[in-house]
Image 1: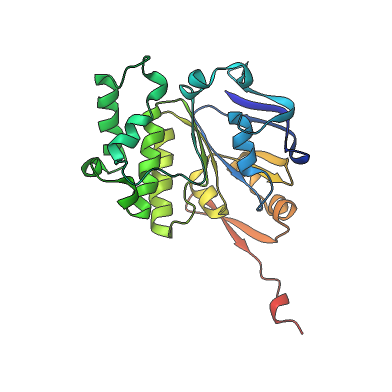
Image 2: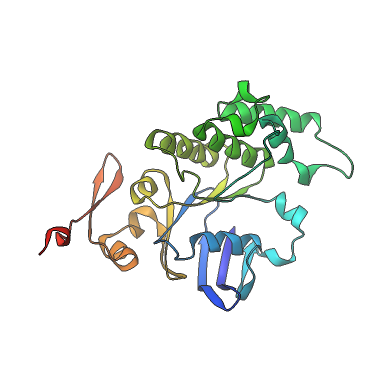
Amino acid sequence: MLETRQLSAAYGSTAVLSDVSIRFPKGRLTAVVGPNGCGKSSLLKAIMGFLPLTGGDVLLDGEPVAGISRKKLARRIAYLPQECFCPDYMTLGELIELAGYARYSLGGGPTERDRALYRQVLETVGLSDRAGFPVNKLSGGQRQRAWIAMVLAQDTDVVLMDEPVNHLDMKYQFAVLELVRDLVETHGKTVITVLHDLNLTTAFADEVVLLRAGTCIKAGPVAETITSRAIEDVFGLKTQIFPRDGRLVCFPERTGSAGAS
């Protein structure tokens, strides 16, 4: 179980998170949703210890994350940032091998078990035939799947993803989120991901956290949390929300102000 208790964080003197208490259910896909600048990415960075806390705690199975060594934490939580980069010369296979660094012995490299895992994750993301390709030569959709393969290769129980479908077209948004969904259903991972699109959230997530101005407005199962009132409170937008084929659909209402004289 990963949870935050009264977590507050800041960049210098600028507070970005305030008194955030959230429990992320094990084996579930939780989407963190809210307007631009509300603290979604900052929440993931604070959980990982990349953003200094000004109050509260982050706990992993009851243990403060601040007291866990970076190498040990890398065996338990994988983190995919919003923007990922690698050198032009690096191949997909080399990138995947980097994911297992926390398991390697001092001066050692991947074991046979590690190599079998790497082959498996490349097959899972549909890139088995691209291991020798430079990562930066892959298409946008393939690169995003490559980063997800790296997360899988890290072989942790908890995965944090910051906007994994950013800059992708609709086809690849669904393809990538189906892979993320598979991390939960097939691999038993606990996944926490930042998303912008409410309809992608209702299509793929089990749980949702609604943030506004650095505070948690509402959190819980999607069906209980995504309501017209909650969306208006968080985004200042009126929506109609209705069930369709077993999931919720969010339909924003037009204000008509664009054509007003």
